[in-house]
Image 1: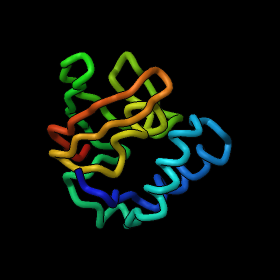
Image 2: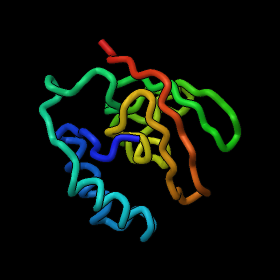
Image 3: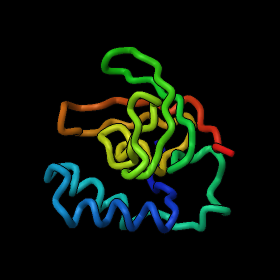
Amino acid sequence: MSHNIILTTGTYDLIKDHIRRKKVTPQEEELLLGQLKNASQVLRKNLPEDIVSINRKITYKDHTNNEEKTILLVGPEKVKVSKKKISVLSDEGIAMVGYKVGDLIEWPAKKGNLKLEILKVEVEA
């Protein structure tokens, strides 16, 4: 698993605000603050194509239930679960954002620990 995540400045600010508003568990807050401190911030046009970010289609394997899912990661205001548009601030979104294809992430989510493997990242046109 890569240690330093890569985020766009906008996503970085969104997560920072999410933490500030206490929308995460204390365990998540500690992990996120550590990640943000070491994160690389880049402009969207400089974001590598294999990095999980907003407006990217992510295929991942959930190792807790052995399911493979494909979702579109979106900002909190564009969520449409029925169309598989999942918020970057959801448990899965916040766990995967900034990581790259091949990474296996273990995350202490509110609804139980997640173990997610990123299989594919596609840039949405």
